[in-house]
Image 1 (tube, one colour):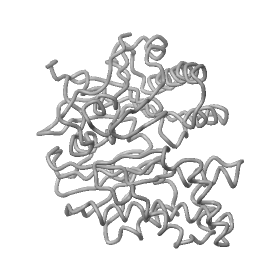
Image 2 (image 1 turned 180 degrees about the vertical axis):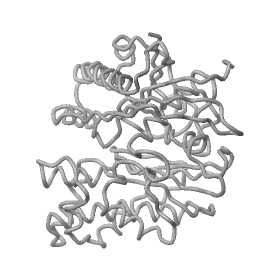
Image 3 (image 1 turned 135 degrees about the vertical axis):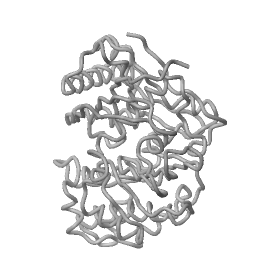
Image 4 (image 1 turned 120 degrees about the vertical axis):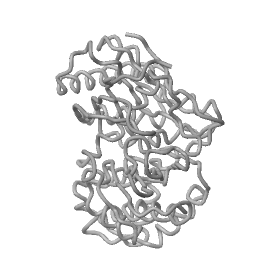
Length: 378
């Protein structure tokens, strides 16, 4: 095992929400007990243009081999540019950076069978002159795991409480939760995807209000009344009652799913605001339902991160749905929650270089702990 010494890595994340690329420059060093100490030196967020978002969205629903191949290389260019911008923001010499850890963009995720994230690592290495660690999910899937969620290792080693059990809920495109014991211990850590985060909400907004990428500040949903009967029916989907470990994605919460939700709400007499409010209620109630079914640990606090944490209407609905649990914005405890997954993948890159397994089998269902990622040398 390499000597444990402080290392600086860049973490890159492009999530299912297709908002853009998050990049974090992070210094890691050995901490007390199981923990790893970290210092986030810079964070940048590069939004996708409407054309980029449209092309990535189209790839999630099928294109041709030439289209996939070209977009894989182009996304590598976009990821490299995001890394360069974050490095400049941090003011760190490239010679002092150990590598770039890139999640890439998930194109297809079939839990237990296959997973595909692209964004060509060779392009990133060529443009930045740095080693790149990528393709983190495939080894866990090869070991009979779900390949997701992978953030639990960061939730345990970086963001656990000193004194009690904590739930860390991400509301990106897909919602996922990690339940962590105090003190950075991995024993007892569990995690799973709760269902939709912002993917259905954003999809509904983009269908009904094509000029808007999302419901800023939850203003549209706040003016509507959810159709609770539709939410109750949607929660009968087998995914929600399936026990963890489990993961999901846009393969389930797809464009046809969104179009059917809109059609059902229309049939129930809901206007545009009511449709968006129904999508918000679906996310909030799916999280609460998963906690009641699958979270027996004595959790008292929920830290919420991801784009959904910036939607006050969603946060209010979530707070009501999971009461009496205390709901706190991740920002208040640590840093901008939008940076959390980029920091987590920087940690995965650090663990790869240190030859330390990074998956949590109690979260993914893998046969055992594995070193994750593939190295592309500069």
